[in-house]
Image 1 (tube, helix red, strand yellow):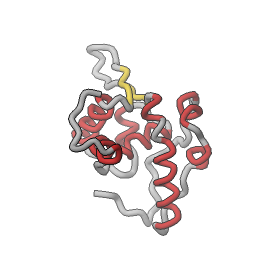
Image 2 (tube, rainbow, N blue to C red):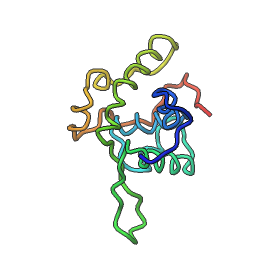
Image 3 (spheres, rainbow, N blue to C red):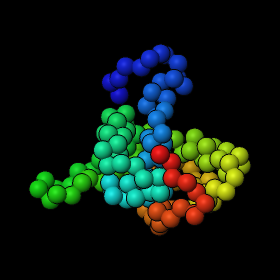
Image 4 (spheres, one colour):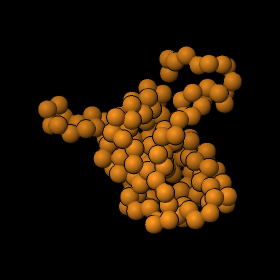
Length: 144
């Protein structure tokens, strides 16, 4: 990763990469089984296509995900997958999810497999943890 950081603090440097409101949600969607641009975008948070394109590019540049490009001329976008470095964020997302569940009322349940999985298991699985990431509960506001 060839990048300039605002300081040599590990936390500040990590936030330089992941500190916006979308990057960890893109990583979460990949952890839950999304692979295509459309699948990532269809999550209930409603990320705009231009923002998603930019976040995917940044996450690829940071070495957290890889893009497997579609055949040239097919008109299809690539497919995305976590790298081992990206999968290493699993305990971070697990902790954030548990904190949200325990401290913010009326959240939808955390997919059980997400809380018990290790980064190695995440990379080895071939099935999504959930099949529908587009159904928020009716009492959940969209994040804007």
